[in-house]
Length: 419
Ligand code: SF4
Image 1: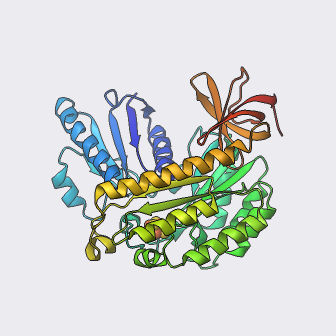
Image 2: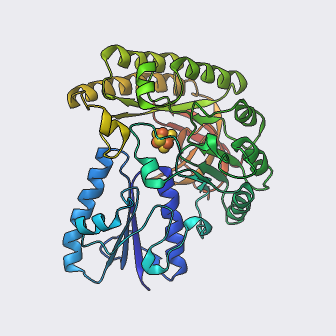
């Protein structure tokens, strides 16, 4: 039987699309292999959201050039955000690649069509469900709208059918994905919204948990916060990227909100969902970011105390407004200093928050085994490791926390099944 291998980097959307692409290839008779060398069909699912990710993709493509010389019979295909509208240029740049196909579609040579209708045959207990593609926001630093296009939402009925089918195949937790889930539905004739979708999905029997990401501070509604507060299956975990704590920088990024609005929103969420865990994304070293403006970001993060922060140093993405109009004027060493400072700050905050869970019993949805431990996540998204001889994947297990760190928790089984 022919074998396929998919190499994926980047966001959860890429992971979801790779899972569905694998399922599509299996329908065509391919079987998966962990070894690219053994594969008949290799796919690189790429990310170019930052220069570091793009460099990894290009290095991988260079390594495959030598491989393709030795194995001309192997098909090499590339998808993901490297694939722009100018596929001819990509073909010239990487002549050893047999096929380029846009994110969310399938390879042309296999009769590719839009990829949403192929569900993983054996999904993991926790799976991703794309609900929108693309983005209409055009933040000045971001390449995503140029590569994934304008926002396109899937009808709620189609998503509900898909989640029901995934549950039938063993899924316990569905994470709804979109570049901006808070504007879900505004491009559909009936104008459904994310809150309405959550109410609909919450009634699916057998589904234990629902998550969603990524939110946008300018679009998050009170109705959505109330849905999170009131629906039993919706996890109290919100990823709300702030990107910067300075109004001038937020304006230059064209984020559409102020730091004060963001703080108010966090206050509203915490008032309505007291057990909520919050995560955020931050960019340091944006063009023109002064020391004072950077300190405003650090101050906001220190005061709001997030469970998790994803911090990145700004990198120029050709084709974006920032690349065209703003000088990348913060030296790399200074960007690194700012990034390290945020990471050290967050390590202290996360250590403190997680230490509060010591001795508590938490509900963990077990995903898989890592080394000699099982791993899973709490409703608030905390990674938990524990030992045990049971057949745990897909089960909700009560774990008493015995050890904490900024990044994960460890404990022991208290009762095998929580539900
Ligand atoms: S909201 Fe902004 S950062 Fe997020 S995908 Fe859209 S353009 Fe990019």
